Length: 292
Ligand SMILES: *[C@@H]1O[C@H](CO)[C@@H](O)[C@H](O)[C@H]1NC(C)=O
Image (cartoon, rainbow, N blue to C red; front, side):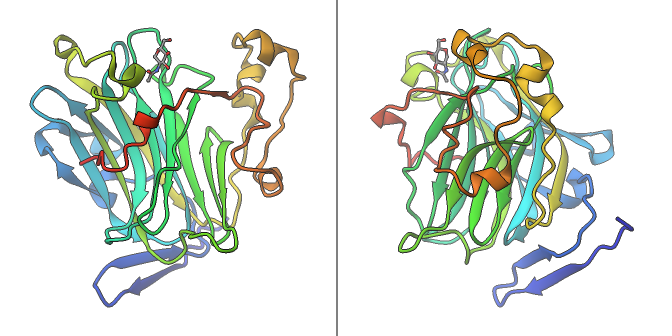
């Protein structure tokens, strides 16, 4: 509230800087300060003095960046505007990952599509090197028309993936199951060619005549995890009057899901009326398909 900003910086033996933010005032990130290019600097464009960034993909390669810091439990936001128009075959990955042999990872993967066809948002959770927990949904808006906020809310007991403040997936700590509570993770994003599997299971290939494919980023923020993000119900589709499918329209309008509610409900947030699950085939479990 008063700009009180207590950063506890722990230097691990390996020299990794881990930041635990106790009472941090949310701060819009600056890409120069917070990130480094990991792949194809010539395709990473930092704009507006570091307030915005674009990654692009063309036939020669994709591109990517990573945070300079590692985090252990956080509430991490990024606003992303996905590749507009024909994005078939492209994959934009936005994720947290540790750099260890038995790594932890929390993924948002945006699978492109032909012009006018819906993107798929695939989430995945790796705990101690084991993934295979892909879930897929279609979004309730066009993610290429504007920036939307994609959040990973990560606490010692609960992980929530949110889109514009709406939880789309909950992963809870369960007795006897591996959980992500020991390994600090960095924030990564990249865009790459996934046309072997991404769009309609690999049927639709990347059309290089439409390259470069560009994803845009802004407003990176790291907040302390124990404070649930404020949910802005005005942003929900029904509030905006965006056309809903007949099954969605039949459901009573109004907020249905909050972080507090997700604590009690099964994972995923299957009670969210406007979420449509996208098909997930066996071939979609691409644990070895590593983004750069
Ligand atoms: C692309 O559009 C097709 C047709 O609407 C749909 O079946 C598919 O799930 C969409 N998304 C992807 C990534 O294939």
